[in-house]
Structures are given as structure tokens and as C-alpha cells.
Length: 108
Image 1 (spheres, rainbow, N blue to C red):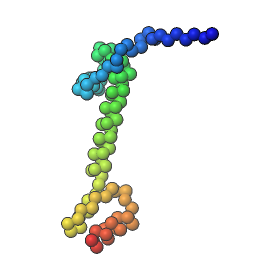
Image 2: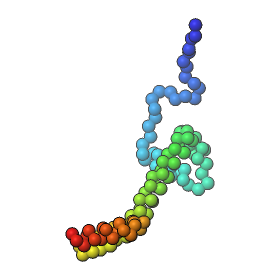
Image 3: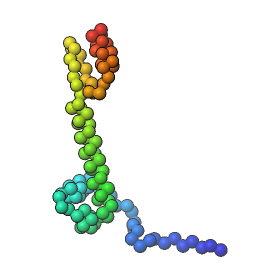
Image 4: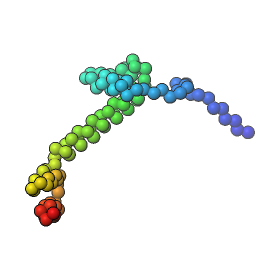
């Protein structure tokens, strides 16, 4: 006969999952972004695991990268004004496609 005994491992979470507000996360990430900060020591001071703080920091940096690339793509658009029409295109548009769009706008 095989008997399995299920016990909680030492260090495992007890009770419900803890939830942190967005404001708390933002303050923790801001502190973690300061130069010369030891993120593991900061996490211990805040009472959270270092992995949690690293995860929040990684998520924040990812959103910053996405916002920056969206801003860059908006700046990279070229505007062509034909009468009352404004055509906005990426610089990597092909010449044939651009000519087709301009012809369509002129005939409309």
C-alpha cells in the first residue's frame, strides 16, 4: 500500500494571495529604478519577494518600451497633402503602393 502525505512546504504561502495596489507597485518600481539600488534588499525591506519586484520592474520597462515604439512609429509617418486629403504613410511603403494611393485620392 502507498500512502501520500500532503503537507505545506516550509516557506510556502499561507492563506489568501496578497494583492498590491497599482500605486504601491508604482512606488516600489520607482524605488527599484533608482541608481545603485540593490533590488533584492529593497524587496526584503518592502516585505515582498525579490522575484515579485523584478517582475513588476520588467513589466514596467516593457510598457515603457511599447509606448516609446508607438511614439516613434507615429513620428515616422510622412504626411502628403493633396487638396483636402491628408495621406499618412510609413517611410517603408513601396513606391508602387504610394503611387496607387495618390492616384486613388486624386480621382476621388
